Image (tube, rainbow, N blue to C red; front, side):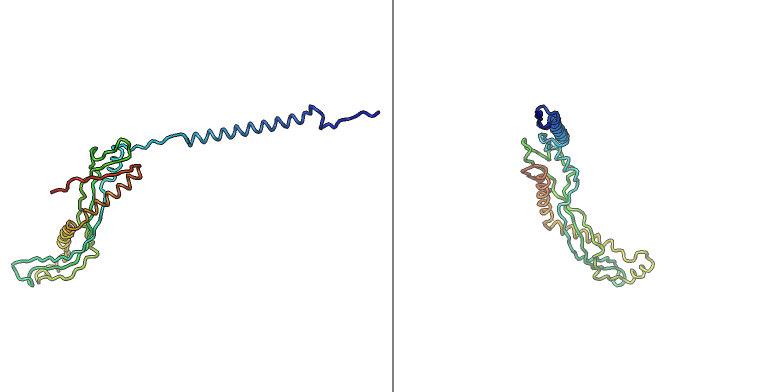
Length: 226
């Protein structure tokens, strides 16, 4: 009688099946290990459980503001007519000069942050509010736009005209511009440029310190000089 046979692939205890399972388990373990290594590396660079320290203390804020030194808070432009006459004991058509001009210039209103002291900044205990005490804004010297100055008239005596022939600088308008500067600075004092400078400074500090994490910003100004 013929001997019965069983297919080789279905025989119990086949070694091929054991090797396949072992290989699959090994690959899974390696993959898990690689993922773990990647995660550990990322945690070393980006710590999701870490904290960031933000220094909102008074001295730190004071140093940041002091670095700004002179803060230009407002700029105003003025146009001024100037009439300068140089007289002598002789009649004007013989000796003397009169110049009429229209001059434009700018005056800046600045706040000096560089001299702020430790008592100029107060920070609340919770670090959310800050109060500053600032010096009054100051007006700068007028900056004359020489290029836009317009000479309306210039009358010179006979003696002055003759002297111009031998002069290297016959039309020296420096006295004219000095007079114009004084007039422009006087006009700036009568304007609201200082008040605008205080408003602009307060608005800028609220934006600047708000970005630094302060919810409330108050500004006090030193008394204006008498």
